[in-house]
Image (cartoon, rainbow, N blue to C red; front, side, top):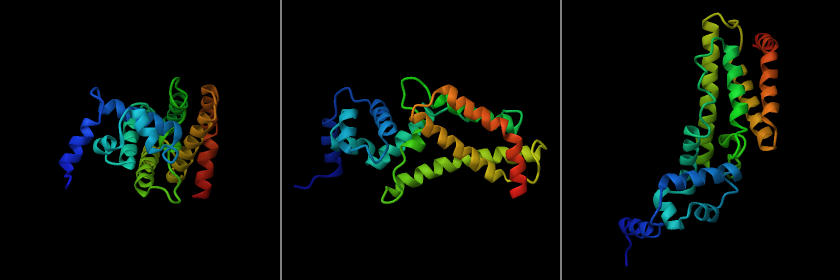
Length: 216
């Protein structure tokens, strides 16, 4: 007997709960990936949490990797949203960076959620990891870093920043600091602690700009 894709999908659909909600199942997967990370989340964990059997999960989402990438996209549109909202509207590059870091501190310490950034904390190990997932997360991380770099370049064009600075180096520094804040949040750092880190970065802004000019 030959089972067609149509037959497989039909059987998978019959295996789903009658009240199956794809969005709710996806959100459950997002929370699980966020808490445990990609590598430590098994198919059994996912099917149990999402209320689906394996054939139904594959029929609805394709694969664990595709499910994860979709979950990360949901995170970016919901729980992870808001950090970068004022990047272009801040009056100066310094204010923009300070705002991003303070919003980061607030976002990473929301009550009732896993702490820290899902994009950073749920990433698989590069060695032997799923290349599709690793590449997708790398693209997301670099997109934010490049957005910050463009905002710094705008600051140079507007005369807000010295023409000789390395916008790429400063953007990489801020992204690295943000990733560190994510790990601090996961380890239990309070919002006040993370806000203080953001304020320290702002306080050292002039020295950082000067060092960037000297090393450029």
